[in-house]
Length: 402
Image (cartoon, rainbow, N blue to C red; front, side):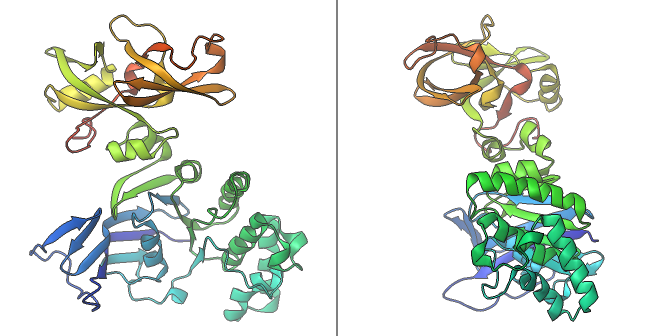
């Protein structure tokens, strides 16, 4: 199959009043263009920057997920890889071949869209055969590929049906099947599950995980759903305002977010943020003060802060709901009042008000005494020392990465 490499890729949409195509310049030119930001979009004299300095190397057969909020540039990046959008600057390689100027049909890629894009007047078999007929694939080979794809995706019983006779999940399987029959080097998927209900999305996520074990291709998947990103990707690329924020495995970006945006975007419910003060208790040890509580980070976090000679300063303290504990620790308890109690079955989500700010704590149902954690009840809690994340409130960066 193939690797995919993006080097300093940039996409600029020309200013509306100009309409002209931006001139391409050689990368590395010394001059700086005037720029500013409007509504989180970077705007230069050339136009609106949709994707800026995107660098990524995707390994052969790797499953990479581009994730971020709407308008962050993830679909634009995917469309540049597909050849459906021109690259303003930078280089795109599929394997060892530079493909900036290569037509989509010659890139040996296939793409699955969120709206299925099936031909309603054709049967499932005819939909699967369509790209192979365009490529003038011999009949025997075409039958083999179609039957194999249908078997992998579990749609063999529906080969003679038309799309209107299929459920949403079945239609999406057909759309995926039409892509994989081409045996592409790279399979691109642009929010393919967004039109499905919650139950079907869960089922299709599992199907896609099984699929990638059965076909030898490189996957690039776009979604705004961080649950899909966490469950599907070998690596996740988190984007915001056209820029890459962090690249890593699901566990890496969950355990060690590089900034406040990544910390808040990854994880459900999202990470709690507290105003705090980083103080030194002696020459080699730090603690975090939140209200009257003084909480010491774990030894490895202490070492990271010490290695960077981090000064005493105001900080934003991030802690995930599942890492908060109700166990009493002298001098380290934070006080709050329960505003909302959400029963989730095996756990309860407690919304705590602390000086007017909302905090969510996930507590196992078995740990709660009947009636002891009702609305309006005072509550004290603290954090696991290794679960504390410290961010600079001015830059948003994780102090362990600065």
